[in-house]
Image (cartoon, rainbow, N blue to C red; front, side, top):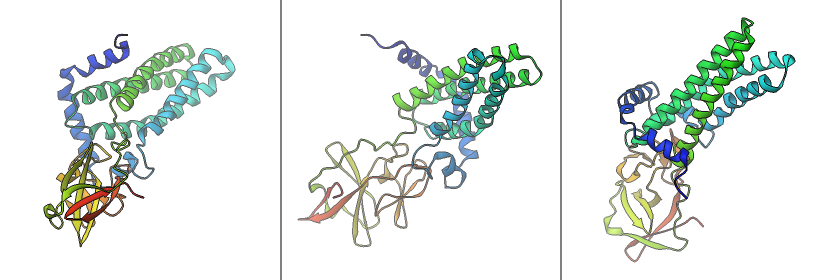
Length: 289
């Protein structure tokens, strides 16, 4: 069986390098508007709910606009006021939904060309859907019901395209997912590093099987965490210590050394931690009991 057509189409979109210049400029502006370091950035990133906020919010405009379109097609004259109100609900939710998506997308810079390009097309499709539903809402308010329905149907088409690209970004390319979701540590004590290589307050990098680990000696204790940041895959051993936390070098999330808890976002996911000890001159780790 050959490659599915939708996948091939997303690959084609991801290969359009003409999208790079405007996408990079927009991403830079978004990062300037939503700088790392807590506050609004943590809110839109979903740090406070434990996973990305954007997928949750998309349910509101998609659900409201889909329901309005179904009422237009099958609800009859009596459903017209309800369809108009549903379009209004979707429009009210579109702004916050877009900002959370912009924030997630901007954090994928600068490394992933395909995600950059697919993300900007995803945003254009969703923006077009919002504009068309906005025009539909305006037409209905002035009594042009047929025009409102046609504009709504066009908006539904743009929304479907945007939703497909959003699914591709999230599920095929892992934007917004926990980068450590499938990381497994050894169940038994396993040596990963010579203890002589540890320097107080200096992160050290170790590999055991497919697992990359950051080891930190601080105040006489040894801490071990997954090295790949749960947020966007930055390597924590390249970051710096901030008190009893380690900072990701990409977006500055602070994870507590003791338990991997988030002290400051934008990551929405805590960092996996492992038990660590020194035995016979070697640092050993294992998964938590």
